[in-house]
Image 1 (cartoon, helix red, strand yellow):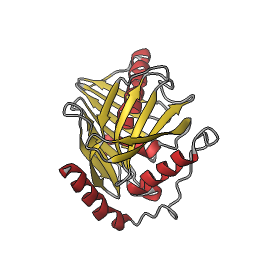
Image 2 (cartoon, one colour):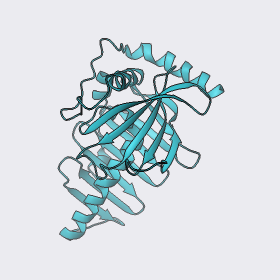
Image 3 (cartoon, one colour):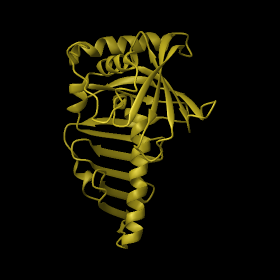
Image 4 (cartoon, helix red, strand yellow):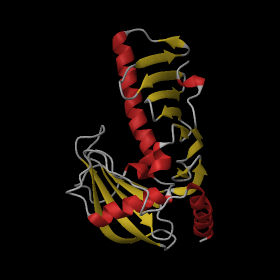
Length: 248
């Protein structure tokens, strides 16, 4: 319960600074978001969550995100341009996730073989899709190809009340058959837990983790704690792309 109290304090202290108001801060859906197949209540909850995290305007105006994924990989991503840097072991990838084009370096030596480079770039794109979703999923509740359903009342591990949403997908990402359940706390309006199912037919989730330690970064809130073993660290929001984004 100490965590719940501190979280509410952080959110309450942060929101007035960004001035988000659910009624006035528009959160339009992406062009192919499944409005017809989604529940009105689920959409309303998604909008409240966006507001609680700082608001759509603040999210759209957030340019560069950097983070360390579980201590395995370091990412820098320019949301505005799609430019992206991945550091994984002795490999560095500099690419644009929109175009798929880029450069790959292994132990400081650039890979010039076209087939090897293409394979490495495709792998980096898949890594970016996965690792960025672990960081910014709550901002993508109304993304292209998403269907949102309200699954009912739920409770968080500490007993606080929550609404449970189901996210399913059509024609997006590497694994559109995946399904997620997310718990939105009724006191903070933040996603504080999720469960991942490999497909809609699965009776039990493959993994369930917390979304804890929401903290202000720039004008938005981001969460880094999933489990003791799974943490997103070195989270940063930058106003401009660093030189390292385009130089090995």
